[in-house]
Amino acid sequence: MTACDHVLTGPEARDERERIRELLLSGRPDLSRRLQTGPSGALLIPLPAGGGIEIGRMRRRGRARWVVVARRGGRTRVREPATLAAVAEAALAALAGHDHAPAPQPIGSRAAC
Image (cartoon, rainbow, N blue to C red; front, side, top):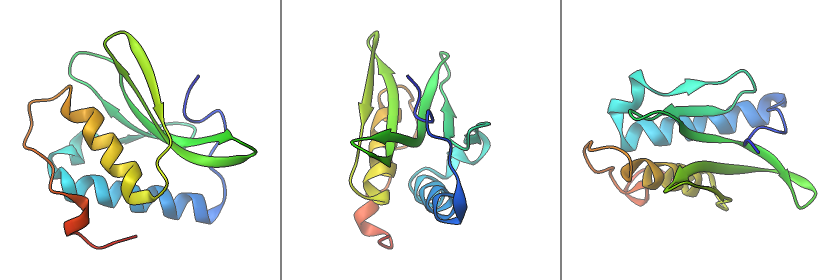
């Protein structure tokens, strides 16, 4: 299962994706060289040891929702945060378990969505 079984479409989804990108980069400016947009429109953060964290929209419970998909300890975890800021925080938290980069700034200290 990937985060983008439901491809990003429409200006609203693209605007939301760009807002998530801004939130990620405000918490971890060092991601500017790593953060990618996949063919489906999902945001991808490749990990140094291989694999990555995927942030995209998935049809769940009858509608497309933002999800964060990350592998940890041989398991794949799908998180479904309620807000764009929470999506970015979930991705940064998943990334913290794989990197040895500076700790992200709390998103609550930045502009709200």
